[in-house]
Image (cartoon, rainbow, N blue to C red; front, top):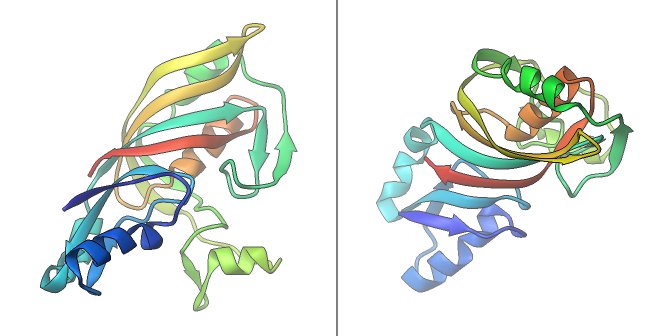
Length: 195
């Protein structure tokens, strides 16, 4: 079944309502959404939980709000600002966004559920440990700009619709688009609209 996860809670805790309503403890979801994000989770119940790994491999679509001029350690609105830079011009932004389609290599975020030497990267990052996560291949099928908010002819925010392969971190796309247009960036909003 499809479930619309609200912003502000983890994917795991959002399943409580379903567990309670169906009076079952065997519930699984595919494709974790960060707590600040909202949108579609595919939820499997009972014996269908064995399908979770297959569904996780599906392509996904998101709508993202990218904030320019600052980067946070988590690449989202919940993190601490670690970098500031001038906001990009619309021309620089448009040129940069055009570079983010097709087959790409992506450096996953240090605040993620990826395991490094048996431990979650996010746990290692919170404890201040040094580690690296190898780049991974991803596909960005499309990056469509829906709207931009300009101030003094500089891009403050961009609303972008992404269609991507499994394993793509939209937070990292925001970071990398920021770098590509000579700025810094992080996500302030994310909604998964299709799986």
